Length: 96
Image (cartoon, rainbow, N blue to C red; front, side, top):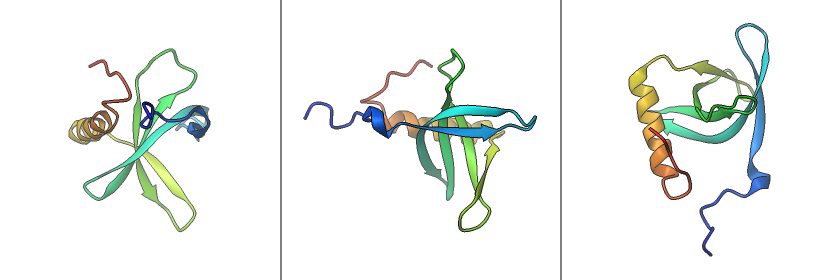
């Protein structure tokens, strides 16, 4: 059971989000983490050559819908990224 922490290929999923300019952008869903009572999505752009991740705040609208908001607060971004790095330290290699 060497790979028990590895995420199987079939579990990766693509989310298509529409930006503020009405442009659809595809992201690979990496995780959803909770920080100080708020959920945050951790995503990676599919199209870009970059390995930079995107962290979005999940804002529930009703029982079935939610909005995803850009996080402007550097402290929150750093904290959520820190949680993500800690959770996947044995699976992924991070460049700081």
